[in-house]
Length: 528
Image (cartoon, rainbow, N blue to C red; front, side):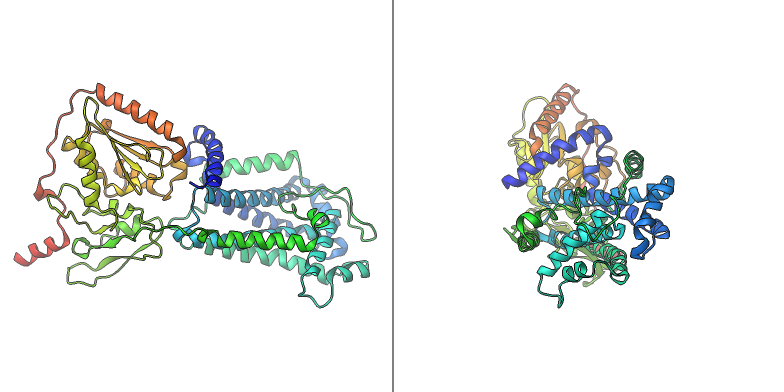
């Protein structure tokens, strides 16, 4: 693991674990950064529209209208101004922390490059939107922002006449130019929303809304802060004086004081280098990609479960291309597939009970097939001994991946079909099975933990059969940095299994009751 990523991941886990214990994984705000970013955007948009009703867009009365909002109408418009300000700051925090978290968990390379790359214009548009908003207040801070922004723009050789010189020479700011800032502050967020939509285009089931309880808690916190410390102006702008003693918004304006220390050219150099670094990171170094999943039409009946379960929308259902009597078939887009194997676990043909050498299924990983998984399970099971024989099915990104001896590692625990658990216990390969994946709030393949839990709870096909003894199955969700936690839970479960009475073996599925292949179905229909 990259040392920087390892340090960042350790930091995130240090923050996330208390939230997990306090609120549960579903309400952990650190696991909902993208959704909270959307949520705060809508708060900014709604509060901005409300404030625009009271705002005078002319430069002569802009400051007075904002003062009227903040002081005379503090109990509604003033609170909305504070909502607008603090939700904007929180959106910056969500975006930047989200960027760091995706880097820490290595969620930016390979097929994920698109979401990472489209995040860069979101950062730029977010800052442009916020900076133009500070101009509209037209207080001392707005004057400082306007002067420094003009000087920064003047440094670029794209304007015929220096903006700052014209701005200072006239001693005033025309209402026409001020109206342009109003337009930008309205138009840029609209374009920002469009880019945010593009950002999630290639994500299956993106979280654009936080859980209702988390949203209500965020609103309550915003309201409390808005009443305790309302957003206020810093005195009217005066172009005859240089603004001093102003308070900065360090979320939006951290580079502005550096223009005096570094100079305008150095600030632009920093912004350019930062943007290039972010844009090129998915390919520095490139991620080694396993071969994409492959469809075997002889065993595919077009049920669409693989397409439904794919976290990356790498599978789509298309018109049938062979002579089997099914309308559709699965088609894999190799450029989107991450070879997580979740589709293998979702396929109804993926059952290890078949007494065939090849053990083919409707969709499989060429570099780690279902047959290889079954062979690995049987090989590991043959080495188990003593009371409480426990076999561990582990995700390669989770805390149990480094265990040896009794552990079968796979790209994602959701690759293991529920019938594999049934196979292990009914064939007496082990006395108990542990399914050990990533942390619930940080699943490497996004939906692996969720799909596994739903399959075990019979809420999602293919589900774990009722005949499988649940007391002999345990799930352990721990990240790679929480190996000791995973080990402790596995040892505790093994002790419980050892104390259980000998399990009552149940007959495995007979060959005739296994899921028939599409080819077999066609043969049966042709002979009747």
